[in-house]
Length: 77
Image (tube, rainbow, N blue to C red):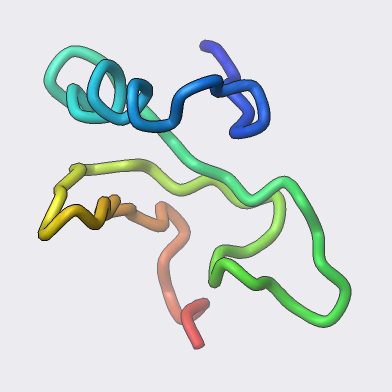
């Protein structure tokens, strides 16, 4: 298991094409919000909670991640 922090990625575009685009083909990825924000989350993800990345997609230049909440009941606002 490896941890990669966004601040450590030199080229987010290169990381998208060389790593995330291969998600679930030959590697597994998860995402977590490790920066608590007073008064709630700006990203919509719960703090210190991991989500599995199921698929990546790019539409009209915008990049999206399909994520799964393994605890998933009623956390989304």
